[in-house]
Image 1 (cartoon, helix red, strand yellow):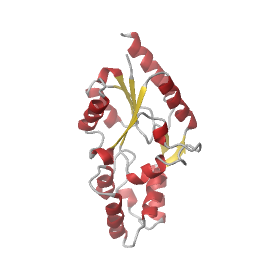
Image 2: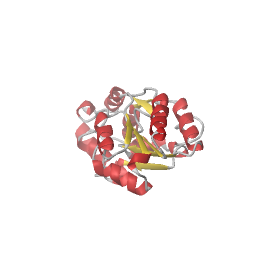
Image 3: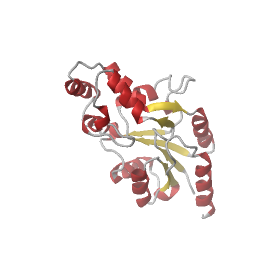
Length: 212
């Protein structure tokens, strides 16, 4: 019986565009962002930020050194938030429906303070709510000090949720992440970035529940 549904953020809740983020960082004076940014996991100081190894202010200082010019926190936020290109109200409505049906919803995301500054703000959904309005729990890589696809982040999430893998669905657009989750006994879905996952999720829930 499926009781818990765990979502990735970028690519699942909203569509992402790595190239837009690269362009934004270039606009504020950091032309080499393409060497650090990826659709799924970042490297260098960008990865250090998302894994909680450095703070937002430390990231700003180190980015300033790399760019050869003083960067502001606003510059950093502008660049990072370029990843998000479309927040689907249909997805948000689906989250509300799933919670009304009794499922516990969690977010498990490789993310950072600059992205979450917007995601948790009242501007996120255009209705005055941040993403936390739609979830029971948020598990964020920079707060947990570890990133997907390391198996430990999934184990930490399951432990904190007191959730059984066989009662849990994980939805992520990265094959690396879903493969690790599946190896732990979690049911997985891997939609493409920005694709409609609603029908796939309902089919998976039905199959899993019919086996009990």
